[in-house]
Image 1: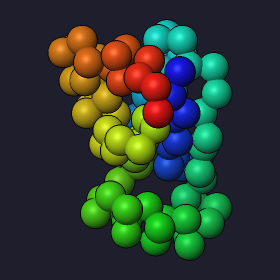
Image 2 (image 1 turned 45 degrees about the vertical axis):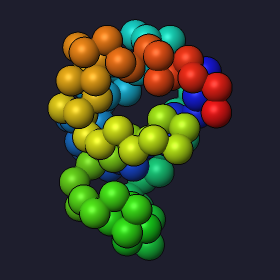
Image 3 (image 1 turned 60 degrees about the vertical axis):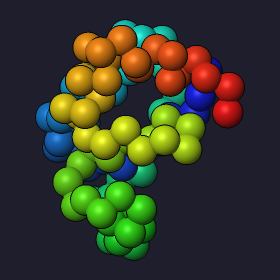
Length: 87
């Protein structure tokens, strides 16, 4: 399974929803980067994604986007193949 990295904050309901969906799809480990605790991490996230909102989700080297993007990917049937891809 591909590695999952997620930029989050402690109080973000969309982060909680994204983590729950990933758990339902079998993801057992998420490299979570708390941007509320580390302003440099937020700067890095913005540089990588061009977005300031959380969550920002990476599956392997693919930037999925935020929670709505993750849900849409799942609804199109593309999340599981992306998670299963060798990387």
